[in-house]
Image (cartoon, rainbow over all chains, first blue to last red; front, side, top):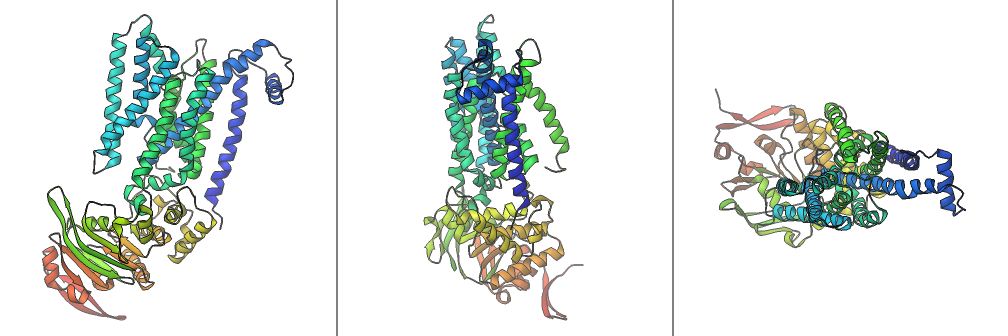
Length: 339
Length: 259
């Protein structure tokens, strides 16, 4: 027996993957210093085949030193946040949930703000942000285990509380920070940007992000069952307690690592899984890979705009919210028709 | 397949919800659980299913204590058919029923051709294979209930627990679901279901289990248990039993004494 919905979904994922490759290559060409497509393809091809270098140094610099890190960062963070968002939406059985629901972003933001306040160097800022993100979610999780009746609701409530605590901590640091140099640094960091990411920072962050995504990918079929509800999933043989720990850990590793290198990039983890659902339905076997692909593509595209729209580079966090909010309104108005 | 519940008690804080519940049942039986709202019907089901684990006493399936079984082993013995609810995510009928195959597979496997075949068989058996590609949320209550039955059958356990399967269904669908349930019992499934409609018990039950004040008030065949006295006892309503002659035979009904 054939299953047409499933076949259609797989086909759409393939199309999206091809489009992702196109966006990826095009992103190298776009920016303040445009590289003509033929030169770009020539350079990329020569690099791949190890051919001799016959192009000017500034093109080499633009493509590999300036654009490559942010393109990879955009792809990685977009895919990661979308996967984490999709996973949390299933776990909490709520399509309005985003990756920061358990306080990972608020925690990471606090860690970064505190490190900047102490004047630590950028590597420490990222590491501390990551650690604080994990601590925030860990605390929320421990609190939620005390809630016997409804563990998922307990987790959401604990997450809201922890987020609020860390956000107030961040605000206090901003209040006491030196308004001439530390405060602007903190503010700019929190806005979310991938323009200044260095390649070695990216390599370290990719370890938790990719392993988290890999774990979620392995469990994508089970997530369908988790998403129908605690009792039903258990009665169908899912150990929901263990599953919850695995999903929360994987999604938290991803979110904390993303925020620790890029700051707060909102809306991606909420809006992209939605679009993925609209395109291929709710089956996580196709929906999760689709979310990753669409998220990667979306953030690369938005980053292209971020560096081209104005003379001063616009932080990507501002742009994703600017694009995400109207999208979201559109989704809410459309809901009930086909979602 | 035998299901034995021995001395099962459950309390929440200082509230005793179930007090020394004892009964045993065998495959091919259709057991109707009656009791007023809050009598502990759902709690009893949740204990049997292992969703609540803080009970005292034992639930035995073929003599094996359920507390010793893993979540997955439980899923292979007993499946749960919840009330037809409105879902958060609109999975298709096929995807919904496919979820039942989780009990058959190990940790990292996803369903393949063999599992899909099982799903189609069960959908076919319940007469809903034409709905396979439709979204669960777009179905009527009766169709949704059948999809959940299909999902439980895919799980391949011989004990089915149904929580008020006819609640929220229209008159016709209530009877269609009950007839399916009866058929499943004839095929050897052991079915335990709760209902607020004693007439269904009168018509379709092999055995009736009545919960009152957190204890079993009665357990036996409909003829032994269902009389005006019992109904008065459970619901506080005055009724009479009448035998109505229809073209298919005699049908007992409860008639409320009102007016």
